[in-house]
Image (cartoon, rainbow, N blue to C red; front, side, top):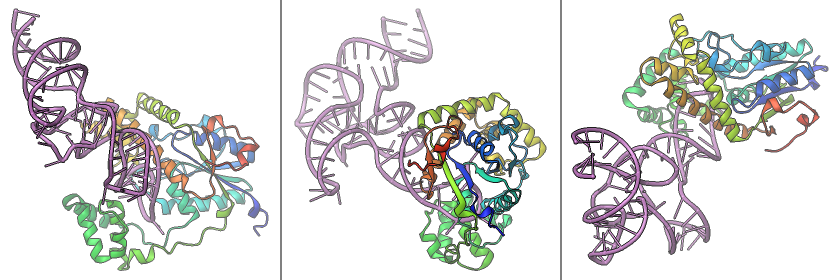
Length: 312
RNA sequence: GCAUGGGUGGUCGAGCGGUCAAUGGCAUCGGGCUGUAAACCCGACGGAUUAAUUUCCUACGUAGGUUCAAAUCCUACCCCAUGCA
């Protein structure tokens, strides 16, 4: 039944923020008859706009974009949700005879698609809140000691200060009564389309990338980022949400709370994003079979060379 | 011009006679990452050298001095900040 689609390619375009993934993705889509599936953990949210670098209609050039602007900003979406949604989208797009192109910088999401997470109950927000309260009062190290008693193997693999992971392991045990360390290795089988994914990683010169990030951030602020945040807060978007915790938004919230000046918010945002870009590169270096493209996506050009493997 | 406080590694900032290549923060670089991932965490970080927690070199404004020993004390000079004129 899948004889026709089984040989068709699926593309993924990754790379650090501001490396031109959108431009390259759209160009590729126009060339091969593709549709974009967003693979960015922040662009999935509705409402938040200016600092997310979501493609404008002009940039989309008529190419359909999926999994953008479709989750309520007060919902905390996660990698498992995305993998499920993206898989469904891939199937749907291919059923129409089109080529799926995954574009975005969230490496964890992409990996989750290719190497599914193990079975796990949905996050219990109430439990998570309680654990966070303990973290705030007694410190992450205390939670780590708790985990040592409940699931020593899991604790041994984590640094005591790595609270998100310590909390996750604790949550799993508390919700299921079973050891996180025992179940974590049980990844699901990769989806049957996973070996048809060709991953491109954009890698522009570091200093030019940093310059671009700095400039882009200033544009975001001068385009009314602060006003946007005020508006979102007035609409009832939670300051603690993942959406408002993202680059730019987080620092504006701090400014609005009187904790820093606008100038400081801009500088800090630029710093946040530069550091983030570096971490993304670290992540992608580990991705198996990636084709590295040394440059910005908007100056790449989708010629045949794009399909020939290079190394970093 | 006088007074006072300062000049420390890419940067901010501790140190104020020896255990100082010099605490710590930041930047930078590298790494990790199994349902918060634009999150979170770990490491390196003057230069050269070694099998090594090895050895050597260069460094705390500049130039001298005191001392077995100075980033730390003294003198002069340069520069900065604030106050008085």
